Image (tube, rainbow, N blue to C red):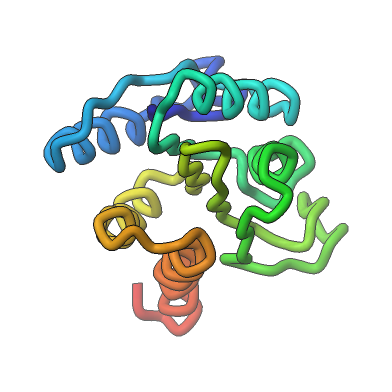
Length: 168
């Protein structure tokens, strides 16, 4: 199951290009995939959707969006609620309280609930496309959540390192 999070997507201010991309990518790998609902950025709503997907027996659940450094972004907190040992490495770190940054940084998340692998990716489409090959190979190799999270964070972090060095 793949779903997007965020008020911007719900309100139609941002078009969800990630769900169709991930759905097609997963299907091309032989997975049966459905689109989940677009979720509001609220811990309880997202955690409930995670629990429901696990109860329904989904093997993989991928979310996009809601991992930023603003209080409105609550996907990583929802993941921690359903898997207290979820891996949540930082992609970027910020000075908490500077500008819009209510948190110390942007994290991705990888957790497990029952038999369901939960992967929380960023919202920007270029970052989802960048993460996809790493996620695909990690799933094929049956990597544990710690290694998969580290690999995903590294490829996304490298994008920002290259950008800051002027190698866009």
